[in-house]
Image (cartoon, rainbow, N blue to C red; front, side, top):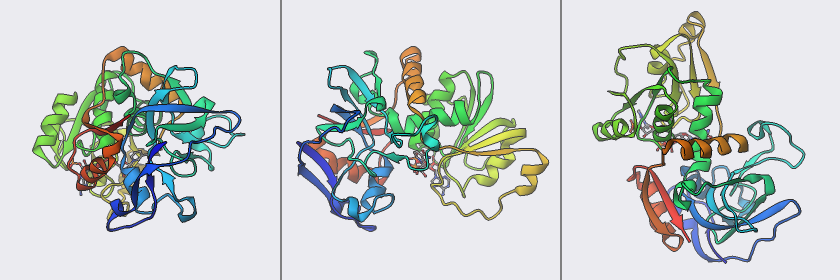
Length: 322
Ligand SMILES: NC(=O)c1ccc[n+]([C@@H]2O[C@H](COP(=O)([O-])OP(=O)(O)OC[C@H]3O[C@@H](n4cnc5c(N)ncnc54)[C@H](OP(=O)(O)O)[C@@H]3O)[C@@H](O)[C@H]2O)c1
């Protein structure tokens, strides 16, 4: 079958390890199922894999890709859940210390077929295209869990989304708006602020600008560059939910005094559960909210998609189709 594979690692030239071509058909172990991929979407994770981050040398060659939608063995339309937990794990799979993401230990989704544990497929509603559904399992699921599980946010609350141009941030804005929240967003870039308004933000601000109100929660993926602003923007008892540190994890000032004196919470968040993915899919079906797709390419042209992502020249998801 055709597949997009990491063959070697390079920090400076990640695309040099990318190989497109034939791979042997996967075999589904007991309790696993084969999904025929119709669409898959790129994440920064795939570029990091080509740099050797999160992927071990002895796992090469590895088919890349965490996100996909397609048909299961019975012809049902499904979305693939990317978090694979240990067979004996029960409960929230993001808390399993031995969990992995597709393309880390098990072969990924950029292929004609991918095998996954039976419980890792979620029904795809007809209202979502395969391309839209393929955008959900990583960035959108991360955003859903940040807002509604780790953030505990509900209709009527006010949220600040930092770094409005990012993949998770754009999902946060759209989902927060659809969930009935008041949405404030920051970006360094004027055109990204304009797009954030189109996506559903009520108000946008330059990064670091003083806000007119204190917020119930801040959604952080930027890290070092926005941390101080995030802490300052919270009401007493408010919460920062953090799932990434694009600008770096080392803080000049962790603002510990503000954190204890104002009784703030800092909550980590990583990916999401199968049940949260099912709830996210239902939310999109019910609200009409859809992921922003930057471009759709045949899987054979995956290299162009990787190059665009590496250049940072995108707004929204890059989708590969079969
Ligand atoms: N925990 C998880 O499950 C999970 C899942 C997915 C992603 N992530 C992580 O989440 C983070 C975000 O990933 P992403 O793909 O959504 O976004 P991204 O494209 O990496 O960028 C996020 C945003 O960060 C802002 N930013 C970057 N450098 C900045 C700086 N120096 N000052 C101010 N803002 C800066 C930019 O916002 P503006 O240009 O708009 O200002 C950018 O749009 C990454 O660290 C990723 O690894 C985690």
